[in-house]
Length: 436
Image (tube, rainbow, N blue to C red; front, side, top):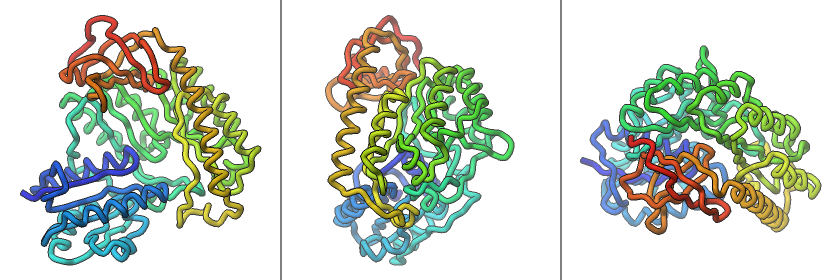
């Protein structure tokens, strides 16, 4: 038995890809190591969205080098591998293998070559690849990520994903249903559907609305989430499917990126501020209990103080419950590198601080209003600190509950007793609802 150690950076798609890689290698007799020391294969599954993520990975590769011994393979996989390709072999001399997201099928063969001393980079795009014949190796638990779409056809000027993930393609609905049915039979009760613009899903016959309805018919699946959607792909039929499929959760992560129309044009986003807010209103009208989180970039090239003010104001106009906020990061290979008038870093940092203050203040106000209310939660895992368990509501609120570890996978009714501004504390409202 050969042992493989994988470290994962970045989005949920990378988490799902790590599970896929483990499945590919398990078929060739590899087992998962519980630490890098002594592993036969050391892999880092990487993110390329922001420069600091790449710098972290390069630093980490330097640290992992100390675990190499004769025959050990040190490899980089994922988006950063796809973006840099053979350059990584030059930049980090002890890296043996570089493989992009479409090359995982070939990993066993490539690892064999690398173990024999051949340094290799496989960054070929394979538009047909969905890895349907490889079962993923997932950590035990009540929730699972399910990739339904790979790649992206949108060309936002700041985004490297079309380069690292290739063109958009969707899995067949029947294949997704079969995977989710198998997960449900194994005890999973909540799935998160993954895609770069997940609500643009279309397999040639069925669209995202049909996929949601099909997911809602799978016995044992009580909750359906999805990420990340694109604002203008929320068609009336998709919104109707969300509202009429009971398992679809009352939360949408809806990236806005900027509240300024002029910045959105420079970003080549396919909506205006007004259209974005219309989409929020349309979803809220169909699902009054919905909560929204978002992604926001500050300091995009050319951003003025007035344009930034528009971004600050959309936080309140959309009523976001949470936001992931970032300073613009230059990505070689994206159209935005050609836009002049870059915002000085100190200005971008100051704007980011102001945005975070606005987001946090709004989140505290909105969360405080929920204290005292009763919600159904799914117990997911132990909290990182203390003896409490971490549970999640359908609205995506995280709740600390005093329950034993044996409660993982159970649904309970809890009353929210307090909030730190982001996480809630909760007390059992009555006996548990279900044991899965």
